[in-house]
Image 1: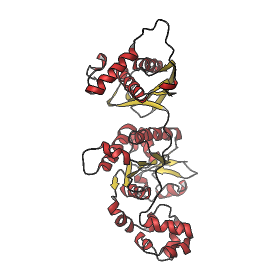
Image 2: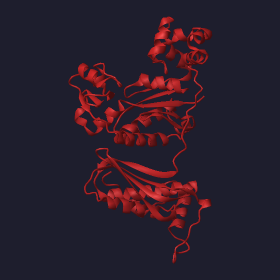
Image 3: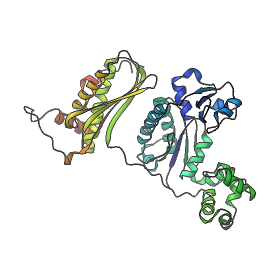
Image 4: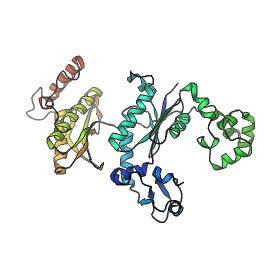
Length: 393
């Protein structure tokens, strides 16, 4: 039986805005047009006044005159969403985005990687929540269940900033105590029709004959409602093909403005990325660095190398060029990342040696390092410059 997570950001647009305006935490904040349009997102203090997403802004302002209205910044939301998806994909390749701020993850194949604890799925869920909070500065809620439908309802029950796991044996008991409005896909019109039939709880819906529901709602919708009321949902999590790139990133233990620390971390990440490339049998052409600042703003820069490579030294050299071209002075850095794109299979590539290049060079040395690490562990051999203790991380 699959194990599925539904991860939903808490008040996503508003949370991203509070991330850069922490003085507004705890206050009723709305994201949307100041006088016209609708509420796109509302903090939980604003929701306490009866405000919800999609409500006309004029009505929201009447319900909570002291609410602070902020204009949306869709570029910031999209960038944050990409970072969140990268976190998901570090746990499983089977990730299906339901919207900009929520996704389903099939972690069935990842459960073996967690050894301790009575619930490996819950441990993965908590790790995801911790990484989202640490790297993106916002909170999320996680639901865990054997189907997408149950996982979605579990995340709703966990909000805000929580986790709820529904084991297969508890699915029916969990569902049957819910009102029919809580069911995924039951809107106002369907709910009103169910109420006219005397059905208010999912348990009542579940014990209504399938044929009765099909006569009331049609063959397909009636059968669908009956199946969901018993937790039956055969829909799989459908992941998109992964981007053809290999990368590594590191969030510093403390924000740092020490350029030596950043440059040394770029070397560590370049070596790690190159080792993954060699292990996967790929070569790359373009180096990308990502820099996230203390205020959670982020910039990305890329450049193309002279040829295909899987050498940590070459990747690091290009990453350093990109870093120094930024011209940052005393900027507080939260996270740094190195990625290589434009990948091709090594068996399909031809490496043209440069004039005067020795028969054995850094690539052969790095391959020897790979072999030593594979045999004796990750601390067996590494660059001398990476053995010094970190100073400002």
